[in-house]
Image 1 (cartoon, rainbow, N blue to C red):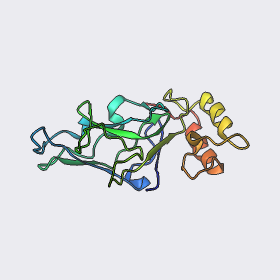
Image 2: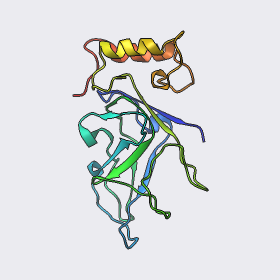
Image 3: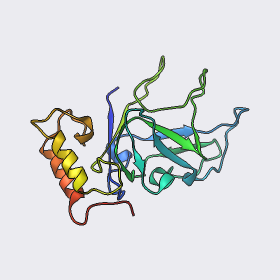
Image 4: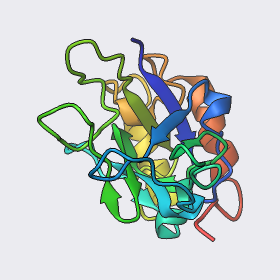
Length: 188
């Protein structure tokens, strides 16, 4: 499966998951395998599960809440949210009520959309790219300096490739410039 790319900004004015072409669906069950209804959408969020990167959430969990509370079957989705983040990550884990969701196939392990699946899975690699490259939750001169080191003829760096097309180019520069513009997009 090809990697999915989610462009984000600390101001929360990036694209929604569904606009980027994907969504996350969850069924929440208790230890007796019974669905858990009515968990508020604000009790869901996504975190960085990429050990090589550091994604910083603006406003904590509010940057990636579910679309609605779980229904009577324990189901909900994350599709309409925009991430308000800084940094860069190759993998996201879903969290509900403070706990990272675990897959229900033994051995139970934390679920991570990092492209590393298990037999029979179609797990995607979710790449999150933000023009806040330093992860301080504001697009400022530090980010401009870092982006400059990613632009050709410098070596390719995936964190500067905002559309995940395999190259840091003028399209990425235009996207960066829009979010850098005065006063610089920041976490509000």
